[in-house]
Amino acid sequence: MSTRQDTKWDKMESEEKRAPILVLGGTGHYGRHIVGSLLERGQAVRVLSRNAANARRILGGEVEIVEGDITWRESVVEALGGVKAIVISVSAFTPRLIRKLKLIERDSVLMALDEAQQASISRIVYLSAYELRPGPIEELDLKIGRIKLEIETALAKSGFNWTVLGQAPSMEIFFAMIRGGKMIVPGGGPPSLPTVSPLDTGEIAAQTVLRKDLGGRRIRVTGPEAISFPEAARRISAVTGERLAFQKIPLFPLRVASLVARPFNPYLVHLVGSARLMNRFPQDLAAQVPQDHRWLVDTFAYTPTTLEMEARRRFGI
Image 1 (spheres, rainbow, N blue to C red):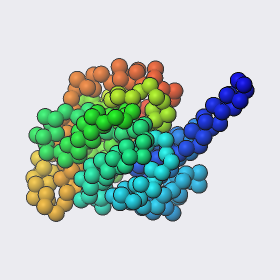
Image 2 (image 1 turned 135 degrees about the vertical axis):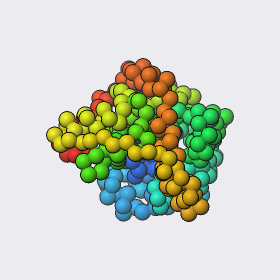
Image 3 (image 1 turned 180 degrees about the vertical axis):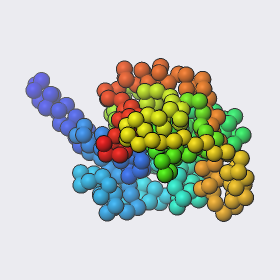
Image 4 (image 1 turned 120 degrees about the horizontal axis):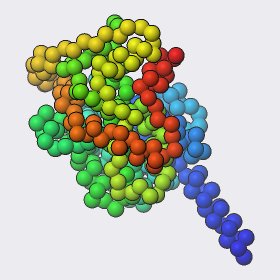
């Protein structure tokens, strides 16, 4: 009798493990690492992509690809079929997609949540910003901040077993500003800024979606420390062995340019708004990074990535 019961539960657990996890934004900066970490744990993974061939090139042959668009309801319904959980790592922060920011990051995500509810899918993990404070969002007119606040509010009011991962800026922010032996930073950056490697995000998000004890929580995801841009330039130089000078450029001319460009270059407007927000990063949050990071290390099984480790990975050292 107990043997039959054990066999029944083993079969149910095996079927649950075979049910895929849908990663929306699975080919993106964070998404591809979330997919990789889930695969390493033996989980079936499904990704919705506009270009199946490109998705397979990025993610490999183990991932189930549904070709379609997150803005099409029929594509989302197809991608949701039979999944046990969803990780939402959607971003329209590219020159090509920025004009569809509201459609992709708000309307499509809300539509996916509605369809997930209809399909009785309860586990949702949503990648958001590190901290969303309405004051700076409104003052700087940050559309993406308002969108993420709206999605988080919708989750909080829903019946989902949800977890929000508040992402610190990617460590890519340091490398993206390197030009010709200089780290050129609009406004110079804040005294200290938390950042995180996409590798760490992949591990934490994968473990989060597989756990059932983190529902209803907003978790700040950060690397081991908050550092300044001049310090980052010095430490990257030490890794590469090549001098990397730090150069601050004024924000005001960029702000004027973004105001002029507002009607026809929303990407520049978004970049300048993000740079202004970065320079005003709350130092009370930066001071909490050691505590936030310690909680992550105590809660998840992973090896945190330092800036030096990320630099070696970035430059193949």
